[in-house]
Image 1 (tube, helix red, strand yellow):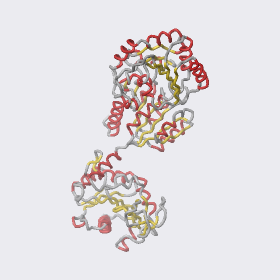
Image 2 (image 1 turned 180 degrees about the vertical axis):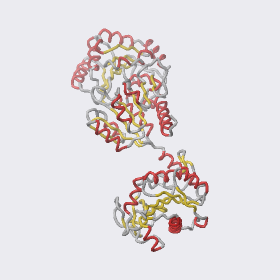
Image 3 (image 1 turned 30 degrees about the vertical axis):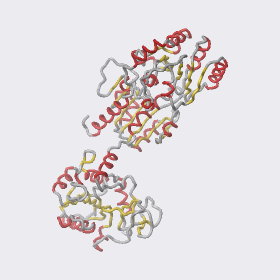
Image 4 (image 1 turned 90 degrees about the vertical axis):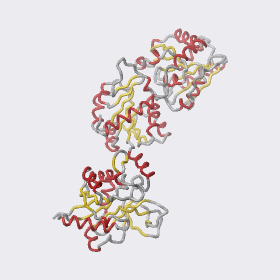
Length: 549
């Protein structure tokens, strides 16, 4: 008869610290569910739950486990692991089950991974017949004799930094039966820190629940001199609301502008060069959710990533691939159609950066001479900053100026030469590069001249009037600057005349005009958008995960 491996989960009905501990709901499932499911998925052996409780017995069967009925006298605090192991082996022998190795586990380790379960069986041998799980802990008496590795190590009572975990032991059954106990010496297999968290009180249940609820989110985002950093900032804003989840940012090596911004906020970033490389990253990471902020997607791309069975959320996507996404958010586009259960249009879903909540103000700035903020994003590919400055100079418009040059700005030499010339003519100009106080800079201005992209939402969130120019035909489709009635939209840059720029600036210099526009902008609450987006994503994902959608 071929010998089989046994995974024995010890789950008695009583508990002194937490009532009905093994059946306590954690993230919607009984505590027992997590270790039982991991054991079954590991396919490392027959999975049995040893219990004295009829309720635990039925729940174990419900989730696919088999049951060994344990007598009450073997469900006491004084009952040893060896006693419970001997009982289970004897029970299975009567069922004509011949055993090779046995792994004893407990539901109080719900984060134990499939890989760790498999490692115990791989490393338990005749010569290393008792393998005990351990974690590092300077306060306990069981110690290791050398640095921990992925391989088993001998345990003793003389060295430091290791605690033996109760109820995690793997052993050779034949050697156990010969000695009627676990064979010495003990060997230890280190449990990864995130898997070794155990439950000792009700507070631990909350901690475990938060960890179990964590999602693995893969963020696919682009940034370069052509498209700027709007997508990067959008993702940074949204990810701030998923900090409890595990996050990996993935960027095309040719479109990695802004990767340092993710690293500054301590996100992991990986680069790829081919679609095959990208799919390999997805395969290895196994994300629960994929965010795409890469402009329009096509069908082929979306079909390839949907095969990984992740919940897919796209941003700023009007491409044919968006029909394959689980959710699509298009805040900068307007649609006459009512948002469906998966596609959401309009400013209600704009994700304004957190700094604008810090500097939020309903007051209107008052300056003796109009102060204008000029910013065209991270790269300003059409060099509109220079065009606006030159128009102001040529027409001798008297203004205080604040210029913000993004990290991808490629016309720095030209712009600084022009600024110097204007300063010599008594223009008050402040030049800022990669400004970290963008919200404050807006509040310090009477109006803003900017591109017709996501920046408009940030400007409006502080109720500041604006002049917008579309840097490309795509931006010309962004309708919010028009229907907000809080500024002047001058259209596509290629059709823009100096005369039109001068006209708009002179209109904005009028204090009564700005007051009227400021009043119009107070109809919009753009600081709540990110909360709405996050709520929709979490609700949608939970439905998807539980099969309700």
